Length: 327
Ligand code: AN7
Image 1 (tube, helix red, strand yellow):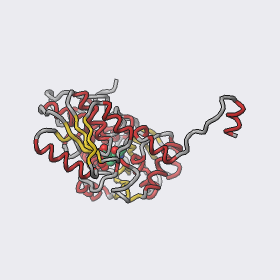
Image 2 (cartoon, helix red, strand yellow):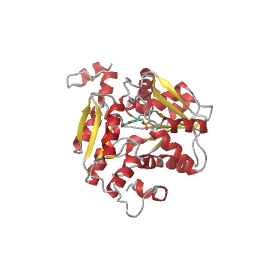
Image 3 (cartoon, helix red, strand yellow):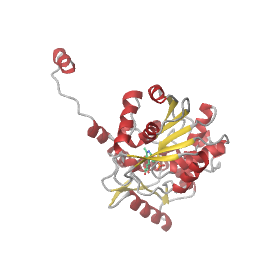
Image 4 (cartoon, protein in one colour):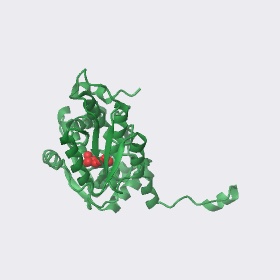
């Protein structure tokens, strides 16, 4: 049985015995060695596989805390704006809590699987005619009106939950890695890891962030975010750790995404490979211990596969035809 994140890290979270445990079995995700990436980079590379969370992304770590607190505080409903993964997570945890969820999506810009998840969970979905940043503005206004509790990462409980990934890394590696590579969308995940490492008390890794060079138009739809709301916290982490962000063209993000699947067997969604792409562009010192946070599951975005790979060929159902087709 997976111990709920709220119970595993109870002492280090802002919750009490009055806080309901709203769980789907989040956190405690696999830390997997990456032998081919390690050989390629001359470093000890690990993958923190956050796609193994219940809704297939790292968002579940923060959502279990945010929705539990919303329930405890008597919220009537939750709202989020989302490039997709936050909405899938919010919808699932709200369903679990018995709360209505309202999801605001940038029109036409969210991967198929994520929309399917939120629809299946019974959330109300609206396509906002605008960008993610426009949708987030609207969600914040609904929160200010008091009709809905905002469960985007501006909700402080979200980052509290997400910081637990740093605790897991410190526990499993015996300390922080030298380098932590991850995607940079709004920056909430980076801010949360920085907080978690600070609280673990053994120093910060160097943060290496991969962000889309074309933030507003990247094919990596999860990180199609014009303005990162956590930029100050990200810059503070850089100042403390010597880290930096690397602007990546889509080709480099997609190349890293394919490499993860084909060389390590790990099928992520394209945005999730931005940390790996940053690492390939800016290799770590020889022998460094590196963790790449792989943030979301590949099944969320089947259309990305359609764009990148040819479909299976048709073949007659006989061994000769099949042998000829693969010769
Ligand atoms: C797979 O779901 O912003 O830098 O609305 O889904 O913490 O924003 C998703 C972001 C990386 C970026 N990888 O993390 C949303 C949303 C995946 C993501 C990011 C997201 P942040």
